[in-house]
Image (cartoon, rainbow, N blue to C red):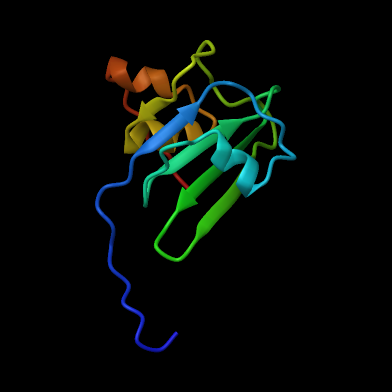
Length: 114
């Protein structure tokens, strides 16, 4: 696009919804779960078996919807809560890898070699 200006957004917030969703949900149905969606934030949803995540993100041009599936194992999830859980950048990275992101609060160090 000619003349488009791409600027880096401020720090992104990550919100994890612990209530399982139907993975057939598309952008519009997921947006209904996020009444106060903010530009640049990420909204994370998990299926009932905790094998898949859907991430909804809104930028200045539109809405992104991404799917993450683990080859084996499950995404760690807390007990069901009515409100979304706000995650830090590091907690999101651990969740995204299928690791128990609550251990970050216990000062455990992890090194991932790729």
